[in-house]
Length: 467
Ligand code: SAM
Ligand code: SF4
Image 1 (cartoon, rainbow, N blue to C red):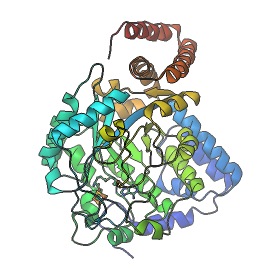
Image 2: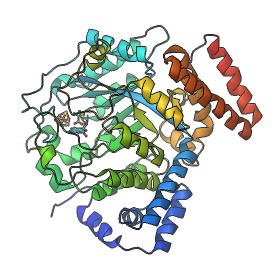
Image 3: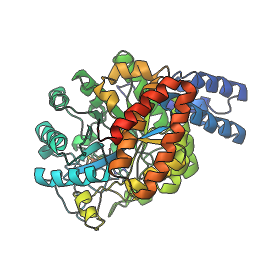
Image 4: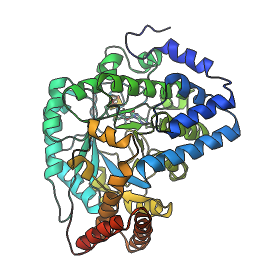
């Protein structure tokens, strides 16, 4: 058994999962009641949810997950896109197409000019929020990342601009994070990949930068110490037992809350392992997560941390996304390309094949936006919360009691209107306008003043005003 000197105790997690088996229905319903009140669960409680097999209880759990999502986040879904900056990597993570021994991919780093082309292509499709993604390499140090953040913010086209830049890169030291904070970074995201120490050691070869489990585990502590407001955690599902990983995500959340005065992670990601070129590990793993288990894990995360944002990526197929989004997801990407230079290439009609892994959903942003409306949701390109200082602890104080949608729903409608006018296809505009009308009626029920406030703003947007 592995020895741990951190807040993830493998034995304790195994033990709780074992004890969680066969809980009485009444016990499970008490846990549901706690989640319904938007209280974060304790590990022993989440362990019990992870062991539910009873069909009726599972149905109850799914419907509660939908309700909590609605209460905390309203019916808006925030859209973003990943932008891959460079795939050079000094690590050899067994599961990743970018690992240094993979000779089948072409190594490339965007120049600032190429980055501008990518940003323009993204702005032309209506994107407002990006996450920049980097391999781990000395080339991609804090100064380089700062340059890419600045270039992204500075690249503007007509009504197009990127309003929030998030980062997914290797963990840094406090000094490095400070530079990113100054450049106006949104969220810094690090996935622990697996919280299971022994598995972590097996899939991250000794001697690699990434083999240091604790440097990575405390990577977001350093980001918060450096003053970055929002951090995102995640696990790569398929490397080890999915139940263990959900427990790991919960322990990580609790650790951040305890260490930083109640601020937990801004978002949780739960990517599933996808096939990648010349990466046989992926076919060999015995921990592949089925679609049914995936649905369970999303609902259980929603119940365990009711106020934390949840990100579902285009790794998943359209069919899976349709089923899983209502269970608690607050952010999705769409129109995504993960080849280096993929957006400018796609605009010319070429779809790159040799990427970090294969994407499950390659539909356009327009198409996904249209579908999201047909679910009765409002796509949001909103970043007003961040500019109004609704980040970090302030965000949490709003999110916890379920107020976010009172502030964010009007903003979602307004940024969606901008999208419809500036970028949507005829068909999407029709569906989108109908969704806005429905939302105005919902505002009316809450308060006629709110409807009027939003309608007045919508008129200004129609006259050409932008956020
Ligand atoms: N290189 C940095 C790192 O490893 O933290 C950041 C970027 S890495 C490209 C982003 C994430 O991609 C990783 O944290 C991992 O979870 C995910 N990833 C790697 N291989 C994957 C695969 N085959 N399928 C799905 N996701 C994968
Ligand atoms: Fe490199 Fe990150 Fe891929 Fe590991 S997951 S090989 S560090 S890009």
